Amino acid sequence: MMSHAGKLIVIEGPDNVGRSLHTRLLSARLKAHGIATHIIGLARSELMGEIVKSRTADMHQLNWRTRSLLYATDLHDQIKHEAEPLLDAGFVVIADRYTLTPRIREQVRGGDGDWIDSLYSNTPDPDAMIVLHAGPRRLLNRIMFGESLEALNHFEAGMDLALSSSITSSFLQYQKILRNEFQEAGKERGATLIPTRHTVQEVHDRIWDSVRPVVEHMLQPIEGN
Image (cartoon, rainbow, N blue to C red):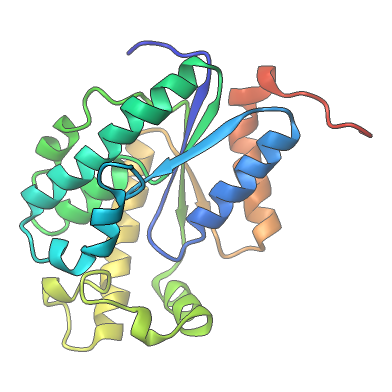
């Protein structure tokens, strides 16, 4: 794979684990050290992003192969038009979900993981990968206290897998499956696994400890330090 002047940092994990929050915090800290950053992620491309986000319910009715192709198109568009040019220019690109999430979500639904991986065979390799994880009940509590149970949709609760007739019970079982898959896949790829049961600052510090060695040569001193 071609090398770049910049670095690609990937943060993976299920919904409500704090992934997007920590992506923003990491970006802000890197900028404070004089590093230009850019964030990519699922359903963010100019080509497919709005379609994917606005037609989520319709997409969940499609088969796993079609969904995989749509998400791969979305990510490849971002890589070609945003990530690769900025990596060449020396940016740190942070991916709020990359290739692991679409693979795992479809593999647990009977999708062919190797076939899905092949859709991303030419994507840049991460310079650092972090997998955030939390217990299923903790994730459910975050939804209940942060939003409401109405925020749980059929697909994200795993109801299509017929795990339970109760949406909350299905969610808990589905998230347990996802957590195991993310941790196993993360270990295979040399990712740093970080639980988010601690405070935001403690989790951020662990992420920074994992990322700093990769960007050490790019860091500028913060004025006043």
